[in-house]
Image (cartoon, rainbow, N blue to C red):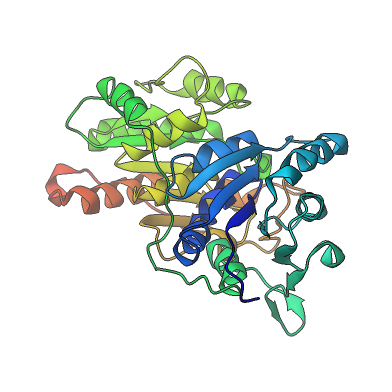
Length: 357
């Protein structure tokens, strides 16, 4: 497909982390077609996440869930925009259907979910010996747009934070010691969650042993998680707002952090986009999908016989997450902070022990 496209529709992924991982491909589109008008379409959070990136002129919010009629209505609103190319990043049938109904004569996506007939250019999924294999999602998205001449510039994930919001948040987080974000949630399901009382223990120990200033990051729908961590913590663990963090405030806050301690969730990838080190606690999901060359910090994971299962709810005893100890997390966080600030070892007390099962 060698065409000069001037009006491009991009169907964004659904998950926050995947949206961040598609930003190198978005940038490659802009570099290859600098004169094109690019419109992104996706859930409200996805559109807000990429807002401010260079080259994105328009956005269209798609319904978060059913009914299908909402998606059809949105496709009807897209059609008058007369796109000449639709890039479909999600693997879903529904996303390809929206692209088809948008009227774009060229529709590029992976041949997944029995939707090939809706695409004009269906790229084969990454396979080994005939079986689909996990691949870092940023590379998968780049592989899709590479088929139309868009090359990776090697600059990694990219996001923009609103300067006014950053300034507002910074005014309430002044201090000289490391600022550590604690992000205990994960939208995928409870299987990704590390025990909440352990997050509280990590915040307490980082405050006592490393002089860190810890701040709690929770979003809409994570009120139960927020309250459980706050009930278990003994020392200070402030919120930046009484309300759940919006995507815009989440980006701004993470951009100011010195370290993020989190599950394998959206905030992890936002941190990578802002070059913030992470200590990521990974259980049921394969690191091949989400771990790339741009990340700094530590990935903590225990190999278990039943994993990675890729299931949102654990069918056994959740051993993949429960066997990650508080000591291991604290020691990894202190090591990351020491590297970040180049602080002599004497200024940090080591965590008491580490046991990897």
